Each structure stands twice: as structure tokens, then as C-alpha cells.
Image 1 (tube, rainbow, N blue to C red):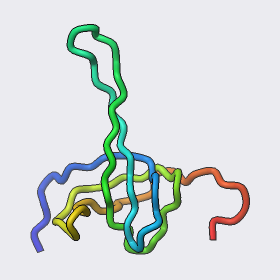
Image 2 (tube, rainbow, N blue to C red; image 1 turned 90 degrees about the vertical axis):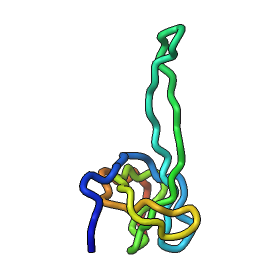
Image 3 (cartoon, helix red, strand yellow; image 1 turned 30 degrees about the horizontal axis):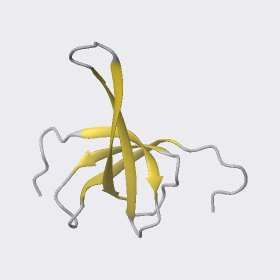
Length: 91
């Protein structure tokens, strides 16, 4: 199987894990306003494949571009960078 040589990857925060084997990741970036030169936060949501349903809301994850897996899902989970701080059990 041939993989992309340099697939795009982003680090973002999980905002939803309600679907089976799918997470929604919000990726935030900072851009400079062309006229006023002030930095603005822009965010975009990506659907990513989470095969083991390992992610929880608030986790920081790295996602990578892959072939289309469904109509909206063409990203896959690479690793969980940091887990969200939760009170109690993560079961």
C-alpha cells in the first residue's frame, strides 16, 4: 500500500466523541490581520478516524491526512498528545 510521502498533520483538541470510531477535532491557528497587523484566532473542525475509541473530549491529539474513509472523514488519529484532566475514572 502506498502512503503519501508527507501527509499533512495537525494538533488539535477533541470536541466530540459521540460517533463510533470517529472524533471531531478542532484545530486552532493564529493569523495576522493584513491591515491592522493584529493576530486573530481561526479554528476549523475535522472528522478523524479513532479505531479504538480511545479519545475523550478535551484530549489534545495529532491527526494526519489519509484517504477518504467516509463522506466527511479523511483524517486519522496518529496519537494522543495529552489527555484531558478529568475528575474520576476515564471508563
